Length: 597
Image (cartoon, rainbow, N blue to C red; front, side, top):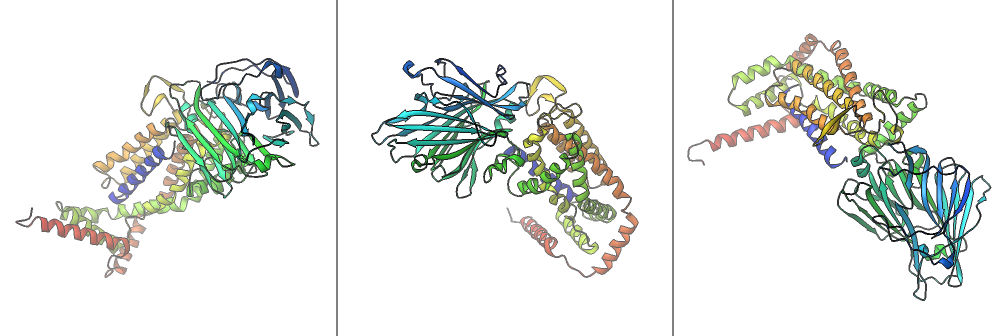
């Protein structure tokens, strides 16, 4: 590795650090609910202190009767409905637990609330939360699901809300119909305030991966900034097909099936002093009057479930964008290369640590031609080392002249100083893609491997009695082993290129792995395990490649190139670089002339 290659790799590392910093970025115990498919329980409303960010609970007049809770279940969901507002009051995901081993409630009456309001033609505001709906007895649907209807009289008409829970699955159909109600022309407002609780080990990652996504009818996807600790707000004045609260690995979303939402307003706030709620999400959607007053009513779907790409892609157009796979090219690599391979291996292997290992091997096999090119370029530079040393000795105090003569030497022997960096640059899309894939793959959530209990978050076998900046209060063993293997690779490379890797370059080559140790210590164990295996496989590739690269043959090839390129002048990049050096040298000489400042 010569100085130019080392500089290129240093810049690549710096680019990776910039990407990491700018683009990367306790549940309360509940009693187990009854196992019956459908249960009903009567209870009187209690005026509890409202949770932060939630609108105050409307206590109904006693004449309206007691508020009731109704529970519906399928294998995946436990839904608790309330007659107050005729709303979904709580959602539990039956097949998931928090990192702390407790039932995973996507939201409940203490953490979240949604409400719908509208204005009559007479100017009266109707608030669903102020209405105690009459609930029908749940009935079975033809496909084995369950249906529950809530009805409330308003202004000579009725409001009917119907929920259909499937036999299996995470999509709940919702129908809203206003019959005989004089509604003004203004859209109805459906609001949802969601105080998100911590469900994962890493609170910071849990918070930084929590946001609101929304999708316009015109086909544009957008989201609030995930990692921002400042209040975020977006107002959308065009039709929307869906909006979703993304809780790191889980989603609570609403899809418009009949007519799009007329508009949307989305807010996110963070209170770092609040240890109960990691972020507050607020959504307000406009429901078209013509839709909810039609004979069929407004048709919608709730999605309450895991943030899994294979599951979300069939929910609605681009609903799978709730799984963040990176932007641009990196998302393309994850979606069409990494995910298909990962899904294929899942069918035959149960250990996700082994799946990651095989993923590394497959990627290394595909990119081996690029790795071979890089090593071959290093071998050429090693063979040319005597000539390069001779040029340095000839012009010890003239760096510009040394570079000019070196570029001429490269042209004579047919060597490009960038040939070792280009293959590395071509593998960068995979490198960046992995930084987004592993922390966002729910498949790795709570999957153990070796000493790691959860590959979707950092492994922490070593706990510190104090907290260090960037490092935190733990040490990831996978990150330690990855750093050691990287330092060993760096040592081998420096030994091979002892003359080129001197001074600052040698220092930086050892500094970067140590910097990445601090950066990656709190990243997903799946990611650091991937890079540990990648380093080990790379070391094996290098050992194998050396057996194919013969210095004598390379020297003979370079000598043949020298004869062939005897009268050849530098071209392309080398010509521009040589011209730039010549210009700089002339300016320096001009500045040194007497009388020049």
